[in-house]
Image 1 (tube, rainbow, N blue to C red):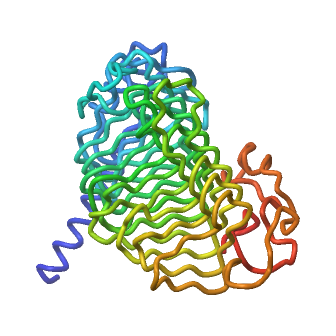
Image 2 (image 1 turned 180 degrees about the horizontal axis):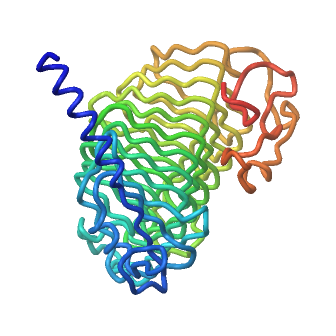
Length: 393
């Protein structure tokens, strides 16, 4: 056996041995034990501190009320990630109301270490499943972390963005996220989004089949993130309205805000997504000078433009902009557009769609965790244009 083959075999055997000794660690809101199924921990942090690569932390049903946020600062590996999930799909709520910063006063700062019910920093290869995070100073806050996977999280009624990636972040996947009613009293609505990937860079980040609604600022915000983010089957609506009675309201109210002037050009990809009934714009590059790609998206009934590309010479193909308050689109010279609703002489109105009833989209997810299929905003003509919940395109 060659020395190279020996090294490969030894590494493979080591991985198998590590996986074979992976532990199942249990936590319960009423626990006071050592982490077994019959004597669970009472603290999520205790389980996180005990976990090693390959371990699975199971949270039993109930509401957890931590007084300090959960600090995740150790990594799994590519072959042996660390998993944090509900046990047997039991309903698990992490309620951050007792954490510091819920909220601080107007204009006060929120220290980095206090951000998030789950504070994930400098780590890789964690998997998170089926958790509800409420009333926190952010729901999920991830800084300088990569190769992590998030599935079926609900982040709502937090005192900052529901879910935020920041810093050096690559190859993170977020799927089946529901993030809504997040608000930020510290800034009178200026910064709490449903999903944010901000102030950093890193390839391979994906948000898929997710819903972002009724957040105080924007549905999605990619402020100063300098690498492409892929957005597929994401639905953003009702963002940017002052539902909390802030006296000096600063919410922006865009469905998808895709950068900022001064970014390194970030060539984000947005496919089969909907922005509707937001206070301001449906999709906006916000000054990002990159070349964005929009394929089969729909902007309907927003308070301003459907698509506003003021700086990005982007490619827009087979999108719909209809029933938005101002000009349906505002595109910088040099944009490549084809097959879109505005590229033909057809006039679009509510009657151009099979349905303008969003109740199925906003209702319970299906047994496969995807949003349920409906005729919402499907062209009555049957044309292959705009976003659809019927199937992935």
